[in-house]
Image (cartoon, rainbow, N blue to C red; front, side, top):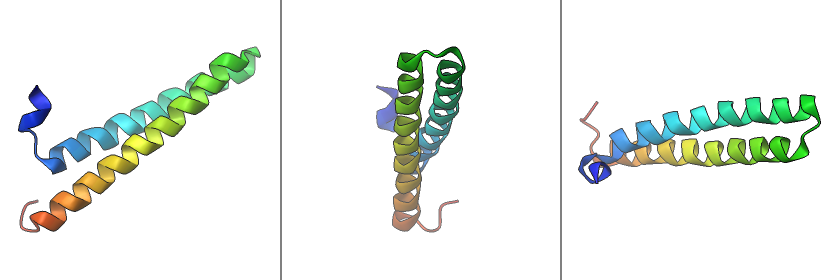
Length: 74
């Protein structure tokens, strides 16, 4: 698996980016569901936003841990 070779900072950056992308995708999905009256789509969009927020938060935490473990690395 390719992720095994990544350091925590790199993985954190990827998780943060993926989380922000999920947040944006979820927001669009939620708004489309709202505009079309499709409550299922709206709910899935909300859930995707929450998942994206969690993933982004995890990524930020990974980066902070990596920086704390190796403060000389930039």
